[in-house]
Picture 1 (cartoon, one colour):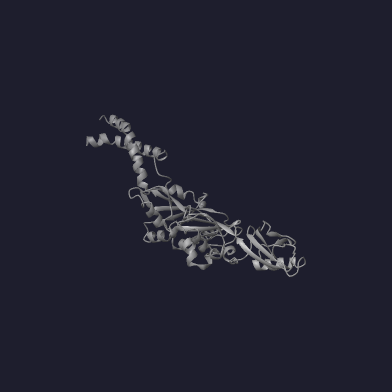
Picture 2 (cartoon, one colour; picture 1 turned 60 degrees about the vertical axis):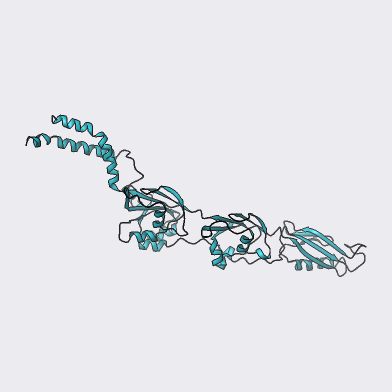
Length: 382
């Protein structure tokens, strides 16, 4: 009985001391991997925060669906294949003129034919022919240019016979860079007038075929497509144009994983389409001892159109901060995570389980509560 009576004054003191320290430490810088679930929820736009927080379910997955596949715009797809003989600025021509007189305007005593070799088409698309002047050549075939030169010379010499041939096609060329067998500048010739044939001419693609992307830059326009889509879909095997720049590179998309997971890092996509479940698997999965499987967050700068669909709104404009929440403890949670697609630049954050933080607080208390216990014991006369 006396033991109970002696202990009763100390018990409230210990409880008060521990409660006080818990409150103090809860507000202090207890080590942790990031914000808690409650702190993230507090950033909701509905609570005057700056992010829209959405619980992922089948509806959200349907609305977001799979990310659009990269592809070429109509500007690229509708371009016709270049004619093999179309003359372009920079091309080098050979022009031979036969005259039906002994002393022609171009020919001399030595013969009736004159050859003008290495006639280069200037930047404006013209060439110069004596007695015919500046003649537009760009956009013509050799046959069309032959007829035009013949017409211009007919007033100078009777019945001229003209032959025009294309010596070099430096003006109709493209540059090929990146992960190909041979980087360089290649002419657009009859066998290399399309994207696939030009890639073959450059030695083929050296990147992993399943994850290789091909970008074509034409003036201020650019288009990107997966390598295998060039061969699967004929529309992607576009016709090339002079000055095109072709870049072949491995997939550069990546996401960041943080929080209570086995590895916090920035990691490149390993699959064409990457789900939240696959992304977690790539970093080793959740940390069994510390993670909260009810709070797997995917943070994204979402385009306005998708954000309006998901939030059932129509007033949003510009990219929106979206926080998608996946609860893996629900019966369908794993299926939901398997169907939720990760996009380039996403951040996956898994919060710590609530008990983990309290364990840390109590560990801190264990090192600091001794003086309080000593005081309590002294008050009890122990």
